[in-house]
Image (cartoon, rainbow, N blue to C red; front, side, top):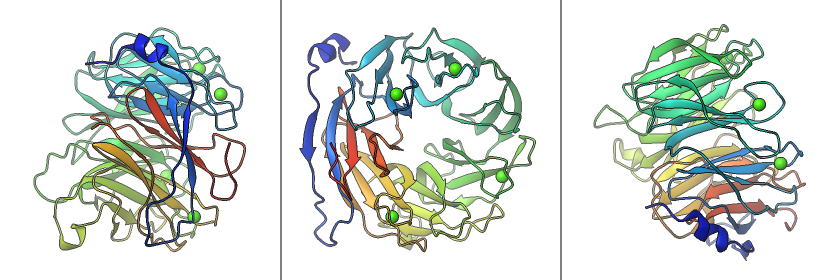
Length: 396
Ligand SMILES: [Ca+2]
Ligand SMILES: [Ca+2]
Ligand SMILES: [Ca+2]
Ligand SMILES: [Ca+2]
């Protein structure tokens, strides 16, 4: 049952601000956040995106709902305006991306709609509004996720679409909002959690994918790395064992050697090896040539559904944020030691509520003027949870 949009709008008022200290008594917290519940009209299965949709220089949030986009404009001080709802045809998405795919200087949204089996483009008007959905391609399968990046380095954004039946398609952008389906890669697992990042340092973006719906059973599930040959053609690289159901993958330098590393968050804690019993994120240190060393596992809550990388305490070492989503949610911060190892989870932004079927990513971005990364996560119906990083300075 979808929540009533009118009810949500009528109930709108003021963001509730709650100071939420860490409840981790074991270690003195070195990070802190000011938590806000910001009205956003989300339904149970909303998918969050962060982008500057009105081109004012301040990061905004778009909640992709069953019946529309809820656009929440950031003012650059950590505050957000009232949500603006843009009705669209009913859709259900497990994956959506933002980018200026038609190169008019305005941020657009591309989403994979499971109901129509279409990939749809919504062109941004540069003021936080979006046009009618235009079909980019029809897939005929169940779309599991989208990624975006300039794979063939021609200056135009391309799309990566993962589907059921272990399919991964590359849709090459022409720069006018149209895409041409080219390569199709058969994966060893169904894939979601698409990351587009240069892994081997050749300047061509590569792709890494997790697998929330693995077909292999039982046993560890593979994170799959696809290397770009420089022309946009992808081929499967080293498979990485990352626990069971690695729903989310992030790539970044975790040990400060300048080469990208990879972390995967696994939603279940099925015992597939003894060292996985209580562990929930798998960290793979990169060699720089596209391969990775063996996994190190770190506890990160009960059922981590999303992971992202940022330096939350501004000490020069990247840290992890992991969204733990079972019934209600917790955002756990795992502080990095700069050598690729991580401390125990420090919980922040705990909220009540619900099990979210659509696995929205945890968003990391700078929503106020300081240089500390902030967090936005799906929250209770009607709201998104915002964590303004106040580690080194109280946030407004
Ligand atoms: Ca903005
Ligand atoms: Ca555009
Ligand atoms: Ca590369
Ligand atoms: Ca750090």
